[in-house]
Amino acid sequence: MHNIAIIPGDGTGPEVVAEGLKVLEAVSKIYNFEYKTKIFDCGGDRYLLTKETITDAELEELKTFDAIYLGAIGHPDVKPGILEKGILLKTRFALDQYINLRPVALYNKDFCPLKDKTEEDVDFVVVRENSEGLYKGMGEFQNKDTADEVAIQTSYNTRKGIERCIRYAFEFTRKRNKRKKLTLCGKTNVLTYAFDLWQRVFDKVAIEYPDITTDYAHVDATTMWFVKNPEWFDVIVTDNMFGDIITDLGAMVQGGMGIAAGGNINPTGVSMFEPIGGSAPKYTGKNVINPLAAICALSMMLETLKEEKAAGAIEAAVINIVKTKLKSLGAGKMGYSTSEIGDMVVDNLK
Ligand code: IPM
Ligand code: MN
Image 1 (cartoon, rainbow, N blue to C red):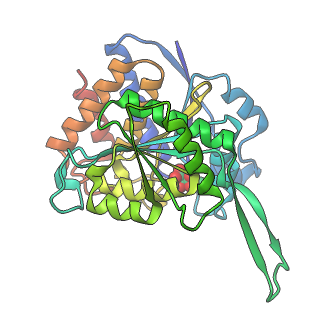
Image 2: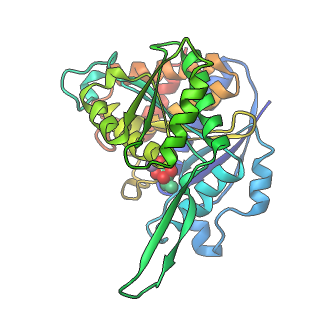
């Protein structure tokens, strides 16, 4: 019995989670597994009523589940940062989900904005460090609200934090067994403390993985290669901030936010799976948002729960629909509504 916590969250989060749960119910019947769910109502609406983000009691309770399925966090009436830091980042940190795993796969070349690139060319995974770096929230204002104000934001990188992330990336590259290449994405030419340590740890761990080809790219060059030569990449490991930025670009290269999923992974604890696109307030309640990112996140969750066949069936159904049915992956342009796409995934499960 899989015990799954559901955080529908804000904006279009509840709509896409509903489609994911529809697919979960169908796939559980085909592949004969049982699960139960519990909904957590954290999000902007609750915050506006109670001023609570996510409570310590909720975080403790979340630790008892097998996985967490999240819609989106972010509300137009709440100042930026409060919900993001108070719910999403707090959960990632409290549950020590130190990997943010973001696959970038193109399922239909017609949806790729890059000229002359095909499904074979866009197939890589970003392993984003998810617990440190600039996201640690370290820093200060000096001389606040004066002409001499200074804002300092520190990137915090521990050897242990870097090493566990890099090890995960090497293991993942080996298990993925595609090009068997791991690229460290950094900025060793300017961030000569943080990425010096990243590079040293990377080189040291690499010795243990002679079967993996290693490479290095500066983050600015990485964005260039994503557009120019995405086929050079297999797995990329990078810090929290760079990983945040390059995965939005990755999402565009794979056809858009409508298909981009990710997992906040604690390899020995409770992981949380989410579409990476955010709450998309302007599409809320219109039945036009693309639920495939959330459905792909569900597939990642089932993989982690060792329901590999069910995960594979969902992925195959998504690929089939993206290849043969959809007009676009963008909200309102798919040729189908949110719920029709959920139904189509269910009908395509084998
Ligand atoms: C993401 C998001 C979050 C992040 C925000 C909402 C805090 O952009 O998951 O990529 O920066 O990690
Ligand atoms: Mn982001």
